[in-house]
Image (cartoon, rainbow, N blue to C red; front, side):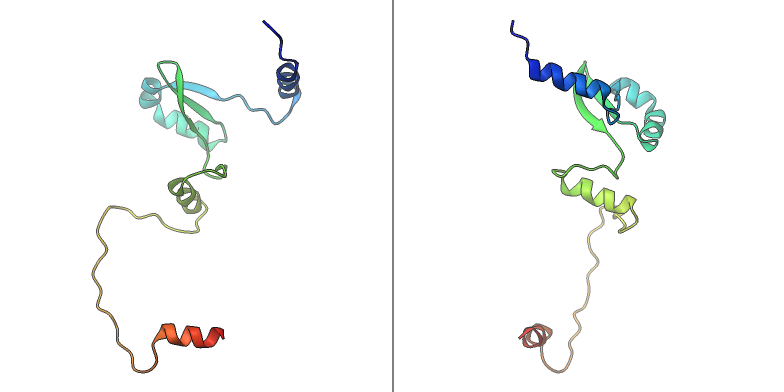
Amino acid sequence: MAIDTQLIMRLQWLHYSSEVTIMQTVGVRELKNRLTHYLGEVKNGDNVVVTDRGNPVAILHRLDRIEENAGLDERLAALAAQGHLRLPTGKKPCTSFTPVSLDGEALSETLIRERR
């Protein structure tokens, strides 16, 4: 078995780096039973790895540390946590509205004219 020297150098760098954080690992059952505790850990800045039968399935982390490839839901939740928007509270359909008719030129035509 060949020893990968680059891997060893990377591990040594990680060992001495101050940026490394040790993630807690928790099984699904324990997470369910002690969810409030682990959410408190996440609020304090710790990451929590969730495992199912020993296999990692998710990472819980604060919303102010989202990845570049995060999905729309995660980005919206992060914006809500920062106070930039409010998430909907339920899955209600949009209420109907009555269109307003105004005299004069259509708004789209006004915009096109103003941009020229």
